[in-house]
Length: 129
Image (cartoon, rainbow, N blue to C red):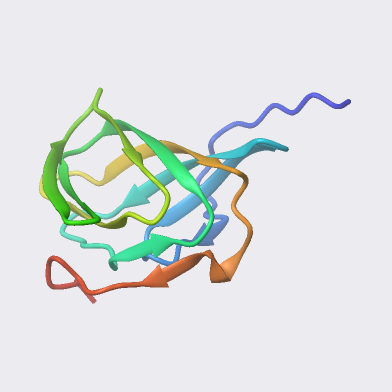
């Protein structure tokens, strides 16, 4: 077994399928932990996941998260201290509404499997380019 320690840095590890910036903080057999940033004025692409669920915890910024599943739909305002879940198969999209980037950490369970995990769905809001 090895221990891993990570310092959040400026380098982006990946651009998520929804368009947000991802910095991977750690991974274990049961899940992945990452830091996500959506710039000021940005709106993500709407997606759903094929095999993973997520829990998000907002660190800073203001935004909104749209979630839709099996006839239930809601838009949740988010800011520092808010946590929410993205259950398997949920359609979701998020956007920054304040004057600073929306930043949150997220846990993906099981670990993020790769590029084909996210499936594009119809947008709730127009997407920023």
